[in-house]
Length: 514
Image (cartoon, rainbow, N blue to C red; front, top):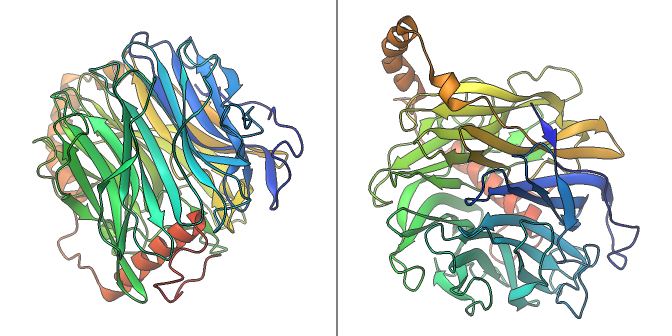
């Protein structure tokens, strides 16, 4: 069962003060969701409302549910002019993007977003990271707190926020801060140690150097209190080429100090395209997601073409059983033979792992681009998987356009409450006046799905080894020059969708942005 969380846009014409580009009124993209640990019936979702073609949206919308995701009450976040932001309350910005939400163990919620004063992420536009807080489960939100604000010299990008599940007063925010002139992009960090009353000055916690940057920083907190920050590192190795890899850094003192990076794997994503038109889908190809279980085991998922000879992306997973010190070789989660994109990952209290993603297995040669949304579940630590279709085929070509690509969001979300996973995702509607909506889809009970007859259990054991082998990296896989070119081109596209001037100072544009 799917329950719609979004609704008609509350934003009025020119509420942002007037700007350029095409606005997709009523279109919602890039959702995130959190569950109240003090009452799992309470959920808060956030998303971009009224997406612009040339970057960001009119504002960030939140929605609160007190019945496990079946009904929702929507409230704009006061981080942009359309959402109620003003000069007086600190939210006087034209656009907002990258919404993220988290619950502290005492039920306090925190939401974060990237805001800009300009029409796009161009030089000269002021950009800032804002945090708002709710003490009534998302029914209302505080005035914004500014964690950092920059002009033309820096661009702050791709933020996340994580409440410490073991210490209600501690909340951690992280993002990358790009230096003008392609001079690097370190991981930045701020935290509150008093429940959001004040925030520490933002600072770099990892700097990969002037020819490199991080992207997609996201923190999880292990049961022993260790903070694990996952990110993509993009290294410019020549005037025409980049390489990307996934790394973590860790903190054993709640963010005061951090280790150096630990490599998880190369990121070998080539990105998703419409096979008929070759129009790209702006997906999560340059972003990975991370989750931690009650056991302390860590799981990272991302798009990767290594399972298909570099032809298209599948969903890869790697796991760590030693607090992030070492990581397993990547294995495939998604079904074989179909391009898959934009994964999310979550671990239930009993250790069951869930991964959601879109794929194109039911796409046809027709003019449309049909995608389905799936939940894969594993009860053996991410070794073997069973699938459930969350959303049946919908046409991606009717999604909002972002830089010439179809856009559902750089990420989607997955949580759980009680004994069910709750995917939180966007799909198209077929109505061009309301192109996309956000849905919550409490999935089939994991406990019920895990019940098997004795015969089924025997058959499962017989097929386990062949399945494990089929999900491993092919023995003949090699990273060819052609794959390197394609992954480099995808990294460049991903960054230029986010920052149109990215790479102009240090790279020759072998792949122009669409």
